[in-house]
Length: 301
Image (cartoon, rainbow, N blue to C red; front, side, top):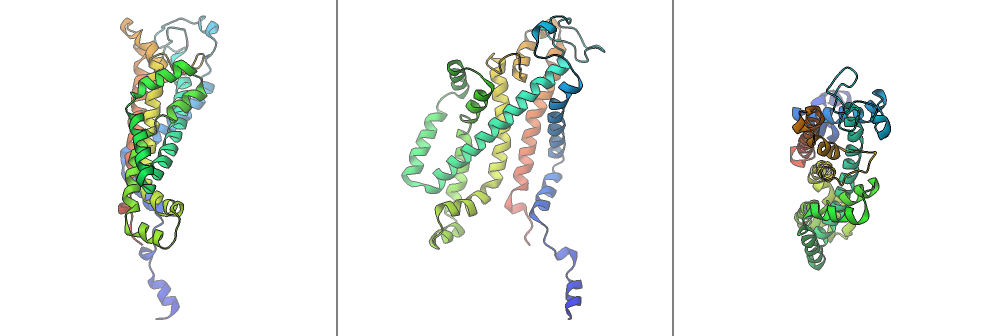
């Protein structure tokens, strides 16, 4: 067979499919995850754009007092006004800007710290692993929400501090999951072979442990973002969220819950639906990403 004939015989079916295309195909197969991804993207864009496209004052309390309080939805205020006279539609997306930003930043810190801690503990093993895990057990024994309340009461609740306190205290459970992967992978043949050939522990972690743990890392990362948004909202509901004149979804839900008994449903239900859908959407995205990064579901070249 000549070279041109050999090239022609090499059909498109024989060309290896790039990994990113395989992962994208697996992700797209989960229709709920695709819809969830679109929802999160559209909502994030809306939270940053609508406060500018739908201009309402959300930071000056004296101006808000000039508008009717607890006004039902109308052409002037599509979702009505709250008990302080703020436009509810503008406030919903104004608060969403802070909730999503703080949630994603705190979630990023959580997964980075948890991954590093878990990788070191699981791969090094021995006395190092024992000490690190007993320390982690001590952290996990502390009721998390009470720890957040205590720290915020003592040190204040600035925006940067809220990101740091949620991010640097929310990684404990993640570290245990990543440690389990590291413990398993370090005892596999290819990891042992790499070590016996003189590879450093850092090289084995970067070349073997991390790539083969990426499925769980990505999944835990998405759930960490959802948890961070939930914890921020819980603090806001308890009155310990972002300081005025800024706001977050938890603070808005707390204010609306005081008015729902008066029949002012527009101060709770639109935000509650959006908030619940955000958490559910992030969980669906996490499930799809776990499948997309699962090595066993990828095609062999």
